[in-house]
Image (cartoon, rainbow, N blue to C red; front, side, top):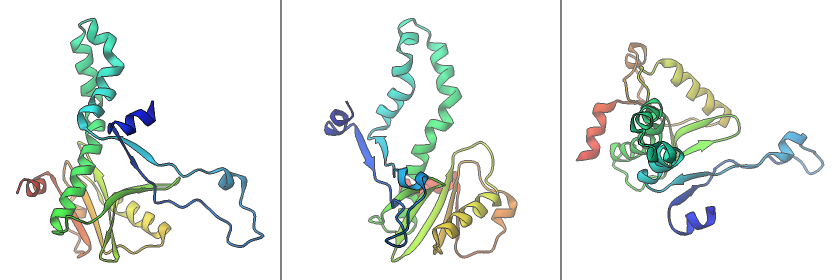
Length: 194
């Protein structure tokens, strides 16, 4: 079934950039947990219509056939922000490309078994990392601290840190004087229309 969906162009595969743990020297034996660890790729629907259909409609076909439209709408309303978060991540990546006037910049998410970054980009030999939040509350400095901790674990020093928020940023975050920090709010997404 999956192979057919890939073959017909309904699904795309996002490959993980994570490397499987290996021993540091020839005679070292990794702990069992690490020996059994598998790096996982992500599978996405290619179109937003397909994502919507298989998230909300197909699992609730019986309700639809029974004419229970209000129940289906309630299911959609309850999970719609969660559903929109992936689309917001994709738009955020496009906005970052437009901001840097670099449409060929490769932007992807990065994940390991321990953590995930929504935005990870190679920028002329440097890195841009970022987080995307599609929530009804402002993003606070804690998100920046967590992202910097993830960078420390990866042993990287990004040139820029980009935060994207549906609902804006805390005063503490907006008053930071940092040249490496980029804050994008909903108003900034108008740039994608030009």
